[in-house]
Length: 216
Image (cartoon, rainbow, N blue to C red; front, side):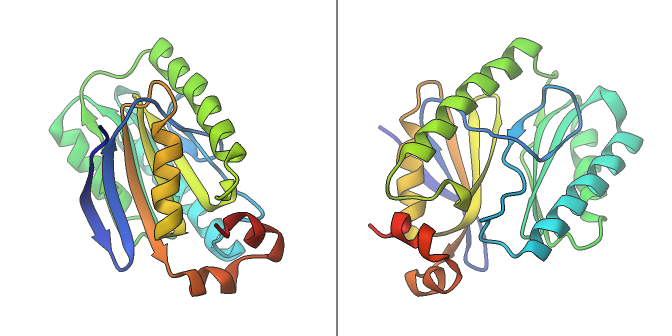
């Protein structure tokens, strides 16, 4: 039975974790090591403004450079920014590196909040990262095939079988994407980092073509 617990809250931003059975990932964030977490990237129909998407890309690049220059290859760290909320995933060899990485990211211009999900452990193997890639493809297909949610509404990162779901969505969409992702074989946990919108707020920012899919 899947569990969902509240772990982090910002304005209407909601982070929750749900035990499940596989991973999600796509493409486009700034990876600090080859074969790192897989993430969704810049999407034309993204619910963020074009300016916000560009700012998030700049944050990811600047944060990545800081991590690489100050911590280097001893850690495997991935940075995902969504509306200036930064998610850090991956592995570091010590608690000191974990704290240092967070401090570096917080110092990047325009970062509003940092969610540090770095694990203190050895770096994942190529096989483990390859498994995340395979599962990511399955999840991407599952979300795309869902008839009642828009794949463009979500930016998803996968790390060691844990799926991090970011986006600007309604409560209905948040619940539905959790169901879809959790049903994919192999997902261990789903962590939601979501800015919750009302149906009225969503209607104001949703193009007509997407609205047909997001209406239950």
